[in-house]
Image (cartoon, rainbow, N blue to C red):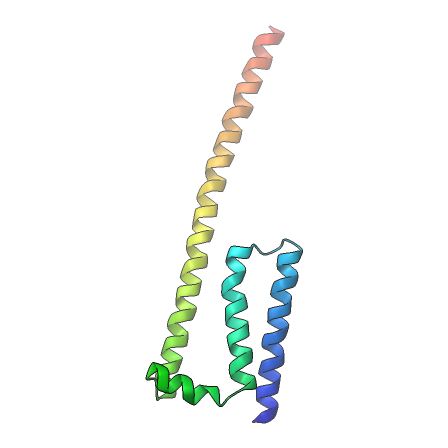
Length: 117
């Protein structure tokens, strides 16, 4: 059990460091990285200090593992929903930009044709 806790803790710390590296290289924006930083740090803390789990159970009232899994699943679904919304907005903005670009290109061609005639 101890090996698994250390393994999960190391993986979460690597995820934490990778998130910072992605921010530094401007691969990941800061507003999206907060969720990843919080998640990886939470997993690291809970895996390296498992005695916090009973304390969190008392505070939250989740005494069964299945209830805790339900909360984690809801969090992950909310995270996926958030990213789906962001991707949808980006898709709409890209579509609008492509259409504007096409119209501008058409106007430039029309102006060039008028100029050459």
